[in-house]
Amino acid sequence: MADILDIGINILARRGEEIIGHAALIPDGDRRKGEFIIFVHQDCRNLGVGTELTKRTFQRAMDLGFQSIWLTVAMNNFIAIRLYRKLGFDYCEMDECERTMLIKL
Image (cartoon, rainbow, N blue to C red; front, side, top):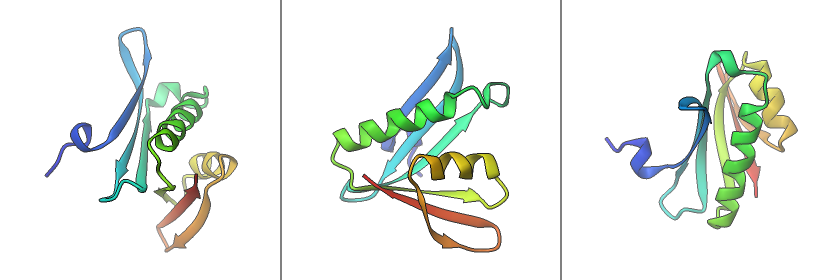
């Protein structure tokens, strides 16, 4: 199995030497679409860290010629869904547990 650090486009958020957030874009085979994942330390949520990581990931994806980004989010993760909708993601698939969202760049 490939390591996300090897195959993904990775962006870190730091506070001093401590990593407080990590966003990654996992490209598809032709590098036109990618899956977005993001992690923010629980003590650093609601401070704009996730928004900034997301914006920087989008900019990097556009610089590299990506056409769209997709993600999967738990349907009860209302904070994340609100952020993704605010940033321009739309729903493309839903089931009883997860929502897949997509943004075209």
